[in-house]
Amino acid sequence: MNNKSSKFKIQSLKLILAFLLLIIMPFNCDSNKSADISQEEKKSQASEPKPAQDFTLKDLNGNDVKLSSFKGKAVIINFWATWCHPCREEIPDLQKGYDENKDNGLVILGVNIKENESKVSKFAKDYKMTYPILLDIDGTTSDAYRVFGIPMSFFIDRNGLVKDSFIGMLTKEEISKKLAMIL
Image (cartoon, rainbow, N blue to C red; front, side, top):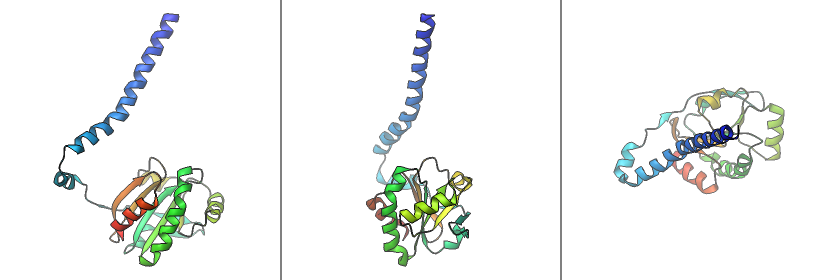
């Protein structure tokens, strides 16, 4: 029985290592590959901006908000949740970016994923969030945008094209770089 237990542990360890290699290898391969590619080749391999997928969600006042109604404005869609620590940390920088650029046509849509209105409303008030907060109660919109981790943000230009996306906590510097692309 001891021998079977050892074999099982070894097989389990092999499976875990194989899984980790599957996760790590694509990142290493891509970074090595991109080091060998010229700047011109990188430009030609860049994907063309695609139209943002339209959606309609309720805001904290119960009003329907439709993404396509913001055509002609630069839009950041920021997917987040109240329990997410990095989400909490980026909110002041997002708010500052919004305050500084809303008169230049910037809209930030803070899309909360799968939390109830009363919890999100209290949170938004506590964090002094003045940009529109939308409720993706069933996760349909986050699924459509293939949000696989939060915070995750999409940067949409005035023509409704997704110019970039970013997973993780946005810093002031990242926000400034992304705004330069869409404003």
